[in-house]
Amino acid sequence: MTLNFGVIGTGAIGREHIKRITDKLSGGKIVAVTDVNEEAARQVVKQYGLEALVYPDDKSLVNSENVDAVLVTSWGPAHEQNVLNAIEAGKYVFCEKPLATTAEGCRRIAEAEMKHGKRLVQVGFMRRYDSGYVQLKQAIDRNEIGEPLMVRCVHRNPEVDEKYTTQMAVVDTLIHEIDVLHWLISDDYKSVQVIYPKKASRAHANLKDPQLIIMETKSGIVIQAEVFVNCKYGYDIQCEVIGEDGVAYLPEPASIVTRKGAKRSTDILVEWKDRFMDAYDIELQDFIDSIIKTGQPNGPTSWDGYIAAVTADACVKAQESGQKESVDLEEKPVFYTGKITVQ
Ligand code: NAI
Ligand code: NAD
Ligand code: ISE
Image (cartoon, rainbow, N blue to C red; front, side):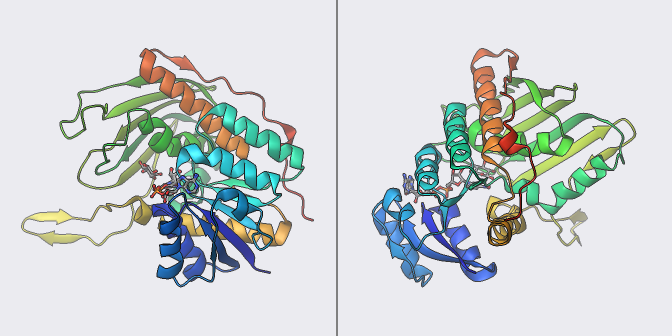
């Protein structure tokens, strides 16, 4: 069986995912595309030689009989409506982060999915598929470093454009740490706080950068996460888990070591799409395979999207108040707790 995809949003990551489904992965085919900039959608069909129709809007695309699954790679504020339209049409959806820009939006999606009666949605939290994070989680789960006490992590981008806001440091960038860390240490967030260090001179006038976010979990683990989106030197993701008996580090991407000019050096990647290339491949292949095999996606759920949004909302509140803010999650519905059933 082939899973036929309709893509909403043919920008940077939309094109990356179209290329990987077409050239690298198995079991998926792009048959439909749409973008608010229709010309951009036409260009993509031509550029990649796709056998795909261009639709005027998301509603007509999701309702196309030929579309089995919808790939949402539009900009964040459009995601909620894109996903709700897909659920209403009974279509599977792979939605890039954020699932919706508010916790209420994620809740509406979860409600619609539960009403539909089986899982349709997977959120693009690809770090859970990154081999480095998977190894880190295995080490923690096997108790190799004892009980985790603290986590230190870094999320640095070389630069951002003028459209990037102080809030986006949380809702667009930190959101990856928010998702992956509670999964990594199997704990829930209790409170968050944001500290602004000295502002980087390269950050544009309205952007507070860097930011230090402190997150505390219910069991008392303290996480220090740095977001610095004007670091200039590269795209740098670091994570260190400090346990009772030892410390475990996220592996750095492999690179040759050179010795030259009295220096020993290794490369640092620059682009996010290169740093997590394998994870994007694995998450989308898993989406395709589990739908074909079991009739449901198996990756991060709408409820994971909701947890991330509630935590991000608390971080935004903490950015504004300068205080510790609580993370108040509703109880997870049974629908999102069980193992998927094979049809
Ligand atoms: P982009 O701006 O390059 O592309 C977005 C595209 O969506 C544009 O072509 C725009 O015209 C189109 N669009 C916006 N609203 C639309 C709508 N309602 N209907 C149809 N098309 C619409 O943005 P980019 O960087 O590709 O990001 C897209 C999404 O992917 C964002 O949600 C972003 O957070 C996420 N993303 C995820 C990454 C990850 O590591 N998982 C990395 C980069 C982006
Ligand atoms: P982008 O701006 O390059 O592309 C977005 C595209 O969506 C544009 O072509 C735009 O015209 C189109 N679009 C916007 N609203 C639309 C709508 N309502 N209907 C149809 N098309 C619409 O952005 P991007 O960098 O590709 O990011 C897209 C999404 O992917 C964002 O949500 C972003 O957070 C996410 N993203 C995730 C990762 C990751 O590492 N997982 C990396 C990059 C981007
Ligand atoms: C982007 O949308 C991503 O998701 C990248 O992974 C992240 O590093 C970047 O800061 C975001 O803007």
